[in-house]
Image (cartoon, rainbow, N blue to C red; front, side):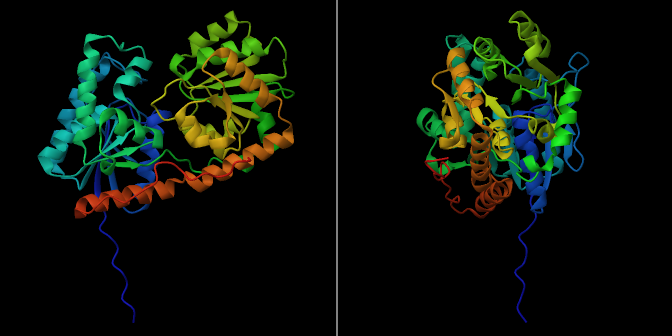
Length: 421
């Protein structure tokens, strides 16, 4: 009788999430999906986070104490994070003194700093999930300027946090290159683990034509227009100002489109801007869309857009668009190129005029051309960006750290898919 191979030990993973998890955008989606896949592989994951987030069934979240004057979800950089990080650090120390983890998995640089302290206290290896440069994000959010007296200190601190981890996971191959070239991190400490998507959930065939028409009618979207979809944070660094300005340029030559603008927190501001630009009848605002509802709303699109301006952060929304078989218009930035490859519709530069030109090309595609390009993008995302593969890769990193073995070798970028989408 053949002996069964014993199952590897289930790991106790402490995940640090210095954010108001869960909040249906960006880094929160990566934290959630990583947790879900690690749990499916048999591991115990406890997330330590700020207060005020939304609880998700089946996910263990322990929240730090809050304060009476802070009650809303924080998007991006904020001074409120200073005291929340302090409270989270205290709770984290108390937690590891009672429950020693096997692995500390930290998200965001604040989490990396707290994680380093916890790693020193417990001896547990520290995995840092890098999703973009701390100082670059603060500049993107107008929280810091490059000539600020604090910039040099924060850049030094960012470098120290990057180097403190036993291994750094990056949400894109471009981020891995950034860490090596600009922050001096050895390649041996970096494991690119790109953002992924659940293509079974984000699947266009799950929604019938009748269902989509009912939702369009409910939202007031004209049935005779091509729908451009955007889902994400509504802020200038996401390119929302440029997107609305691009629509005003498009309006000079065509009126066969309608923008479905999904997200928050800048709804009131951008509604006013759309009205000021004369676009009120061409844009539908939904405010926040829950993550589990995202596929149903994205299914309304004929094309998608992700005009993000940041050159260092990931852009997971692009993968959702690809899984929904949506031709995608974006700026010609490294992360967009990495995900879309030769299947993207790229603006020549980051101007409103270039974005309008790219949107115009996308809107000119015939239904057959949109279907062909969408199918290509969906196959690309299924081949290269599976959460199952990412979870197994993260698990392999954990095992290597605990065994004192070299980290598994992974490609910096996905292999070319085709030169003729």
